[in-house]
Image (cartoon, rainbow over all chains, first blue to last red; front, side, top):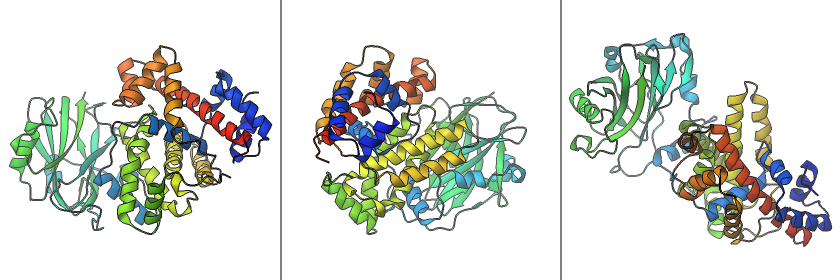
Length: 265
Length: 200
């Protein structure tokens, strides 16, 4: 006897007669490609899948994937709101028609763009570094928006829409640095915590890649103290690609960083 | 429905405290189970690192929202992983089809049924033997290599393994799913044995 939808459901629901269950148990203890194929082809997970994954997890514990304050805070924030979703706010807020494509000067001039008003309460203590995350969307020359992935190549006709996230109030800056060490401050803002879209005058603003070529790093810097351009540029230059991101250079002391790396072509 | 007692007493306590609003218990559940959820999501090569993070987050949000309805608190782990798998599959389905809304609603409904349809959880301690036997029984070749890289070495995601081995992402996901199907078949054999003994 082979597994099929009927016998599988009967087994899980406990409605299979004991003698049939014993026969099936003996069969499943042996090799059967047909039954394995049936199980591998299931398109959604049921309660037995959870048991299987838990078994695998107990037998072969994961070697990484520990939690972090930023993610936990995001989870608790989502629990308090009607609708969660890691990316929804960014996507919802970035309708192509409303996006500005701003030069560096414009972006740096903006302050506290769309900073959320919710008070941060997910992290205890003030000594630890501020958890930060930098994500982005790609705005193509024909105004289409697609998800941005660090490490990928991007066409120079595109612009980037950044979103910075911090676990609590912080001074933020984004620096861009090329492989030759040339750097610029792309954006600075004071955030009260949570997600902040890089914007101008309350509207999302995209950073144009025109004129750039080769590997570029966009470095989000967060600090409890105000950040000046000189310091942000110094940090950016110390992380010019392919520098080690785990560098313990003195200029990184007391700062939290996240980096997006792209190759402009 | 199973009459098994809850297996994980500390887990039961944490769930009870979390339901009562204890934020530290919520954090402890997150810290304890996050690595398993993260690995599960990383096993789908079609998900990029951001997707994986989103699946992890959505899984915990969903689980914590429905925590009070969890009938067997000692089975929080398997329940959470079922949610995680459905979140990952939903995300992949959304990628594949513009008409994913219906599938999304379908899986939402299934997630509510997960606890009620809980199968018997075979004896603790058996899993180590079963999982290792399944790995040992894999013939030398790409599937065994993939399983070893993902589950035993554990440093690479399915996506990274695809890049390293120079094969398609779907091929890696399929190899890992075939391995899981072998483990699932053995788990199912145990469930059938318990049903056959009339113990549940």
